[in-house]
Image (cartoon, rainbow, N blue to C red; front, side):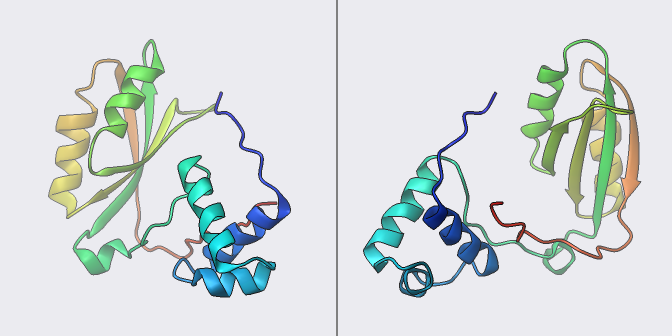
Length: 152
């Protein structure tokens, strides 16, 4: 189980500020949450160091040359962990979760084109020891993608 970091209401407010705009200045965040710029900088660094959050640039894959995205459901024979670890190590795989239900694992894959997707599924994923079956859900259009769910 992943250890849960203790996050107070001020740190939660900082996270929410960054979820709205990851380029917001520490001074602007400090004004919104009632802290100095230096205090915000320290708290942000602590949240980063604890692995509570990441600050990254999120791109639209289509605009940077990745024409095909898909969710792939995977069923595994035996231990799921080695398969999940092997998938997580693949550059084209952006998301790996262990699930309950019809699939043992769900992955999101971002590819340059259909040939790249086929190569990933047929040559890289299906050939992993333990992979019993896959089912692909090719994305036709992205209607919503947000990272602003807050901290609840």
